Amino acid sequence: MVVPVRVAPRHVRRIARTEFRRTRRKLGDSTVQVVALAVAGLFFSAISFGAASLFAILGRELRTGELADFPISGGVVVGLRGAIGLAAVGLLALATFRTIAQRGSVDEPETLLLAARVRDVVPGILVAETVGYLAWLAVPVVLAVGGFTYGARAPLVLLVLPVVLLGVLLPAIWLGFCLGLVGRHLVTRYEPIARNRTAIGLVAFLVYMGLVFGNGFAVLTELLFEPLQSTPLSGYADLLLLGAPNVDTSPLRAGGAVATTVGLVAVGHVVSVRLANYHWFSDPATETEHERVEGESGVAVGDRLLRIVDRPTRSVVRVVWTRTRRAPIKLVYALYPLFFLVSDVQTIVRTGAIPSHLPWVLGLYVAWGVALAFALNPLGDDGPALEATLTAPVSGRQYVVGHVLAGAAVGIPAAVLVVAPVAFLSPLPAAEAAAAIGVAVLGTLLAPLLAIGVGMTFPRFGSVQVAGNKQAVVPSKTALAAFSLALVTIAGNVALATDAGTRQLLAALANGLVGFLTPWTLGLDPAWLLPVSAVVVAAGIVAPLLSYVYAVQRFERFTLP
Image (cartoon, helix red, strand yellow):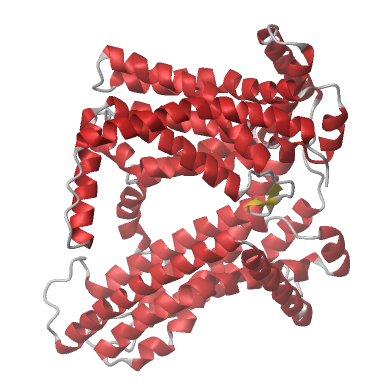
C-alpha cells in the first residue's frame, strides 16, 4: 500500500521557480554555453521546420487516402506507438543520468533543507526540471504535430498534444529521479564505488562513445522498437490520433496510458521523497586509510623514478600529481577532442582497417592532453597555496621543470601504450610506425614546455562549472585556444614538410577554394609550401625553449594582485 505524501503547493511553486531561475542564471553566466545554446536552437529550429513539412504531407496523404505503403508494419498508429515508447525510454535514461550528475544534489542544502520539507523540495525540483525539458521539446514537437494537424485537417490532434507530452514526460522524470538517486548514492556514499568513481565515470564515458561511434544507438532502437509498441505509455499514440482521419485507434489503450501516468507519478513521488530523504541526510564516503597508504606509496614510486632531479623539483612533481589525483573532474575537457575521431572509429568498425594517419593523430592528442592536465594553468592550479609557493625555496627553473616532468612521466608511458599498438596494426611501414611512436614521446616533452609559457601568460584563478554542478579551476579559454592553435599549427607544418601528398592536398584545397569564392585563380604550387612549412617547423622547435625561458622569468617576477 502506497502511503500518500502531502505537499504544500505554495512551497512547491516557490522552490520550482527558484530552481528554474538558478538554472537559467547559470546558463547565462557562461558565454560559451549561451553561444552553444543559440547554435543548438538554430539547428533544432531548422530540423523542426523540415519535420513540420514532412508531417504535413503525411497528414494530407492520410486524409485523402493516398498513403499507400507505410514503411512500418501495422500502419501509422503502431509506428507512433513505437516512437512514443522510444521517447519515454530515452527521457527516462536522460533524467537518470542528469540526476546522477547534477539533480541528485541540492544547491545550498543548509538553507533549503532547513527552510522546507523534503516532500516539498523534491516535487519543486522536478517541476523545475519538467519546465526545462518543455522549454526544449515544446517548439519542435508543436511544429511537427502542427504540421500533421494542418495536413490531416484534425485540430483535435493538436488539442490533446499537451496531455500526451506531459503524460510521457512526467513519469520519465519522476522515475529517472528515483533511479538517479540510487545511482548517485552508490557513487558518493558507498565506499567501494566512491573510491573508484573516476575510473567508473571514464568507463561509462567510453561506453557512451562506443554506442555513438559504433551505431550502438541505432542497434538499440531497432531492438526496442517493436517491444515498446506494447508498453502502457505507448497508448498515448492512440490518444493523439483519436481525431485523425482513416486510422484505427483504441480508446481503451489511450485511457490506459493516462491511468499509467497517474499511477507512475504517484508511486514515483512517494519513492523519490523517501530516497531523497535518505540520500541527502547521509554522510558522503570518506577517504580510507587504504587509500592514503596507496596514494603515499604511489608518490614514493614516483620519487624513486625522479631521483635524477633535485628535491625541490621532486616536491613540485608530487604536488602536481596529488592535485590532479584529488581533482580529476577538471580533466573532463581533455576528453572532448575524442569526438573528432568519430569518422576514424566508424571506418575501423566498417572496414576493420586502421587509417594510416591515426597513430600520428593519437600522438598529437596524448601530447595535447598531457600539457592540458599538468602545465597549462600552473599558477591557477596552486589556488590558495600560490602565496606559499611563491615564498617557498623553489626557483623558477625548478617550478617549471617540475610541471614538465609531472606531465612527461605520465605522458611517455601513455604515448607508448596508446600509439604503439595502433601504429604497428596500421598500414604504416615499420620504420614509419616507430617514427610515430618516437614523435608521440617527444611531443609529451615539448608540448608541456610550450603550454607552461602560455599558461603563465594567461592564468585563471577562479573556478568554473565543469560538469553538472561541479566546480573546478581549469585553464582559461585564451590559454587553451592559443596553445591548441600553436600545437596544431606546428604539427600541421611538420606534416607539410615531411609528406609531399599533404602538400599536394593543401594546395589543391586552397586553389579550389579561391577559385570557388573569387573570380581569380590562385595557382598555388605544392613545392612553394615546403620552405614555408620548414620555417614554421623551425619556429615550432624554438618555441618550447622560449616558452621555458619566459615561464622561469615569469615565476621569478610574479607578484600577487
